[in-house]
Image (cartoon, rainbow, N blue to C red):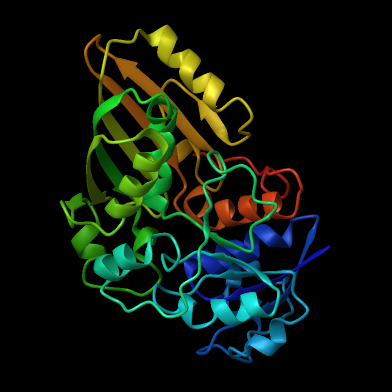
Length: 332
């Protein structure tokens, strides 16, 4: 059994980790922290887990993790870096769900406006691209928007076929986190679609970093929108290729690239409603002969966060990537 700990168990990603790991046949959750809820039973706070967990939240004390094989950090950006170096020095493997280790140090500091403390080199945890994680001590779990965007065009980038790609992404409200804000207030988002950080969203450098690493120089644009649903990200990628490709050639490129990837599904019409609650990424592509449109759909809390973190853990410990993650989408 893999002994797991969770730093920060009261947010949406912490709750999803607890839900997913409870049914993982190779994992036992040993420690879960929360400063605010310390001493409270997990299932009293996460009432959807009622009767499942008898553990109590504890205040952050890294010595409590000494028996853990892996720790998931579900803390906010800027907080993970306070604890991860010490956990690594204790010989504990770490999967960080924040942005603290996804980017080069200088890019991170410029993007997030924070001075990085204890920077360590991490493996970017997008398993469909970085398959061998057996050697990794620190995995930086990707952001939700970058997951949907990168997976939508990675096969084309790898072949260096992209000249320009424009990502139009629409996310459910849980992507903004558990703390209520004016932006996520019901009257402001219900019956509405709101573009935000139109040209300067902090996930853009992550998308650019990974696609450039994979496929060389290309023009990239990204604009996110908030939509009035709880879960899901639908990304529409408008791809301008360096040369013409017919649909059969595109299909072959995608099937070859994702041939060993359990969680990639090719569908006629991707939608967030048909991946909800699952770790699947549904992809569909459409061409008018001159322009290629690729659409991906993920659950932002599962494939976009906690499910992908568990998928990374599986690969780190040499077990099948789908173990504990085969639950099907909930529809309707």
